[in-house]
Amino acid sequence: MKLGPHLHRIGNDIVAAYLVDTDDGVTVIDAGLPGHWREFVAELSAMGRSVDDVRGLVLTHGDSDHIGFAERLRKDHGVPVFVHADDADRARGGDKPKPPPDAKRLGPMLGFVTYALRKKGWRTSYLTEVTEVTDGEVLPLPGSPRVISMPGHSPGSIAVHVPVADAIFVGDALTTRHVLTGRTGVQAAPFTDEPARALESLGRLSGLQATWLLPGHGAPWQGDLASVQDVVRQAATS
Image (tube, rainbow, N blue to C red; front, side, top):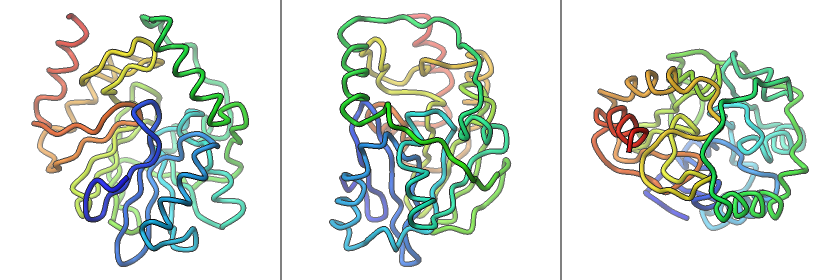
């Protein structure tokens, strides 16, 4: 799905990944689930591109529903995969802490599980090689994506700011569709390691310039980035 002149999305409001298209090639942001590979290749074709045009994949964090086809892209096509140093072990399949319990509703939760199964979430391959990044780095990839540390959901969660796409990709730093309750709107994401720290990190979005705020789960959002932290805080109390 084309969102803008340089911006495409694959997947849906349950699980999404993104492509940044420039004259220098394509940068992929997150890799969804393994079964998104077909959509990924089809979207590239619709863009007049192929996998050979992909220069790099940036992971917003190392959870399994964001690394789906990453190892396939790296191993079979030589595409480097970038992840924050604090999530590199998670992307390789390392242990992760059990997050605090989240609210659930049976219907949306089953919908998420069913979708994940349909997209072969059980076949996710962890990374065997990654390129580690840190806060503030501008990566040598199409669109010159800049890394913004957003710890909380995981230790190495990041946002990725790509000015040419007029977009900030936030992974699970927040969500606009809670996969366990079905609730929509800007809010905290489930399965977050440190909720208070995640909320604090959202303050880092203030002052950035972008039309699109793009989560890994939920619809794209457009609004005042300086208000995001307060909106999430209010959603938690409502």
